[in-house]
Image (tube, rainbow, N blue to C red; front, side, top):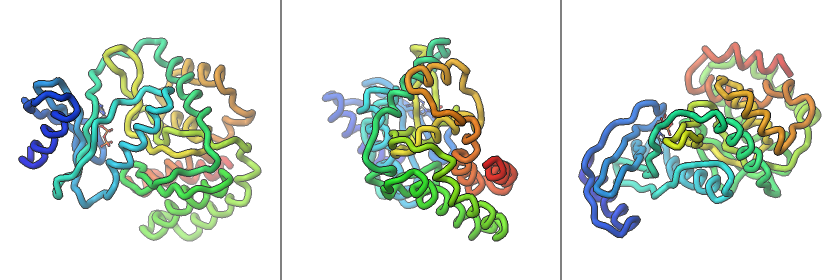
Length: 291
Ligand code: ADP
């Protein structure tokens, strides 16, 4: 580990715990797609550290810290406690509570469903957020708008469509076909107040702790349409039926939600197209055709 990073972490942990401590070992944690992840064993216990180049993704960890704290402060969903973020000039880092892995208890699905529904009851006057953040390694613009359709088009679909077209991942014809659905979005998607969303709710961002309960990691939070979080749980599957039942018992969905999954998943699919290439084009066009 870089000496400066070690000094910063030891000074921080001293402040956090009030005790001088030493980092005993640093083990790489697999599974991250963008950042390097590590388990730190220290004389004051275990911590989870993510690092990246200080210049590659400006503000990414500050935004992740703010998002995790925003979710945590609602007292609804379980997210790890974040200790701090910092920068050595060369490396940017994010330090948080280490979650020991466990086996999922069956009741955890219901708890996640009802907790997510409670999170979605957290509302705001506008769709968006006071700060921009990232979805994966792509910048996510959160400029507030008064309607979901306006926000979804201007802050979610258009920036990704522009990027895909400029990178020649999407032809002009395909771009026009997708833009053609814009005027219909406000009719298709029912009006709901803005909900605080996790924003990147796929199965890989749900981990099981030693207590057998779920924890949510790696959010891309903003106030949005709650169906977007739920649609994303279906993109790569893995969420149990008990999750959806418990969600609906607390905060029932409006009718026709099943038919709107494609339109909501158009955004994460465009993100995948831009991050991983034309392997996702088929699913993008399928989502458009479902509308
Ligand atoms: P990235 O931002 O690169 O996608 P993640 O936040 O997904 O990285 O973390 C990488 C891996 O580290 C995850 O797949 C998960 O298994 C593990 N992980 C994430 N947060 C914690 C944590 N607080 N404690 C223990 N393991 C974690």
